[in-house]
Image (cartoon, rainbow, N blue to C red):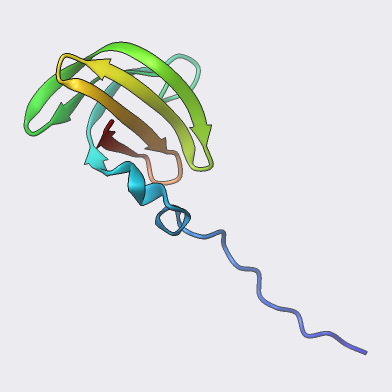
Length: 92
């Protein structure tokens, strides 16, 4: 009995995995050692340069690295989507 082959599907896009919950796109300046997106140093938020004072925690999302950072304007989560080269930001 021959089985029909189903076409291989690409993995769901990050937004379908809930990645969009991390917020809107943002420009981030970061330290990059042997890989890009090593440690965020600052980001642009509401047309203002916001310095990262401390990285509180970091982890790996399915789409790339993520950082919980403290700034003079509060705490934020910055996440880098390796496939698109896009940083995401949300307050928190």
